[in-house]
Amino acid sequence: MATAVLVSQGVRLLIMTREESKTEKTDKSKLKGDVTAEEEAIQAAEKDAHSALSPTMRIGGQAFHSVKKIYYKLLAGRLSQLQEQVINQDHELSELTHDVGQLAAQVRQMNRLLEGFEQRLTRLEEQRQNEHLEEGPD
Amino acid sequence: MLEPALPGTGSHLKERLRLAYFSPLPPDHSGIVDYSLELLPELARLADLTIFTNAKQGVQVGQELGVAFQPFAEFSSGQTDFDLPLYHIGNSPHHENIYHLALRQPGLVVLHENGIHQFLARIGKLDSDCGPYVRDLGYVLGPAGMDLAWDVCFGQEPCPCFSIPLNNRLVDRSLGLIVHSQSAAASLREQRADRPIAFVPQLMPVRSGQSRRSALGANDNTIIFATIGQIAKNRQLNSSLQAFATLRRQFPDSLYLIVGQEVGDLDLDKLIADLELGDSVYRTGYVDGLADFIDWIATADVIVNLRYPTIGETSAAALRALAASRPVIVYDHGWYSELPDTVSCKVTPRDEEQLLTTMFALASDRERCRSMGHQASRFIQAEHDPAVCAASYITAIESLLAEIASKYR
Image (tube, each protein chain N blue to C red):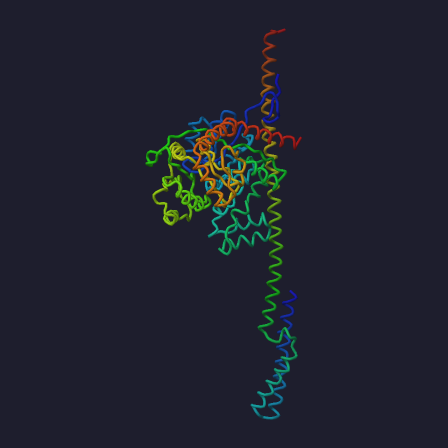
């Protein structure tokens, strides 16, 4: 964000300087009535404007390059943060899957226990019925 | 009346375990396919098994063994019918579906090789989709692993298949693990001390074969060395054939057998030609059928079973050789170091001089070879008997279930 602001400010400064120098150039040429003199004035004004820029902004290509470097650095930092997050989540997922697996095994054992109890209960009921039949009706 | 009891509770009334069994089966070819075919009948005596497979021949295997079978996809909906899923994982691509299911629905994993990096690199299809591989290496090594994975995918770095086992995700998710060597168990305990890890010896029935010596034009005095199994670059045939070429000066009629399918970028033709061994090396290629394979083992006097590097495997080829009463020469690392000295000769990895000395010593002392061979089959009978190994499986499963049960009480 700071980089974008910096760039847009630099560009604006460059445009403003060019506009000012154009106005100055027109005035001078009007006075001299000479095209060559006018061109010279433009060049001189542009030179002044150029030297007024910060060293980073002096050459457009250089500025872009340094901005690009900053951007890539920020991007790489963010990507590595995301990578670490994904890896941590991957480990958490493994632990949770393991725990769910253990619970599932436990549930299966409980089911077997219940089956056993049901069978036992059925046998007890049958036994009681048989005993009841053997005793005969009151 | 007796109380209902859970498997693994140590009660006097133990119910049979109900296990969902996942392994590659015929028509796939792999060491683990053979292993399962030998384990299943023994395990079926001790537990109620259901094989989950899509292979028609797998179904046939189930029928022959009297074991129930179901289509692979049925497990997810019917998993409550089983005490535990049992997943066999190795490095062949036939394990792909099993691996993904083991991650989704954790169970007991039989890790046949400690390192599964080759497997993940194979199924990852690195030339078209790097994503899963990048994620896997990132899981183990962090962001640096992701960078390394991209470099591997773009061919900037070789695949670190032997230095990084890449089993972390599977180990983290599994409820427990079974391995076939003490060294693999120790390394996994170091990696993840809180996961139950059981050592169950790899089963191997004792089988003797018929020597095919006469078919090779060799007499009883001819010393025959052999390398058996899948013949890849890591079998170090460069070293063993070079040593053999030197040994031949002393034993000119000696022979070297190469028994098994040759895979990878292994230029054996050139190696044999360079060493001028054309008339003393015999290559069988892929041997279809276990009986034939064992006959070839029985043809040799000594089996040279060098593997470098090791990925924590237990060598079925070495065990088959011992079961057929043949001594083995192995590198002194990994599981191979666990073999008794009475049945094997151990050589420092990649020490060619020591290898030559060992081969020479055995070639010079045939009586020693025979004696080691006898002890080898006795060792296999005592330590790798299929019934004993299957019983160890049950013990490991029951203790795992007991541990899970105790956690939530």
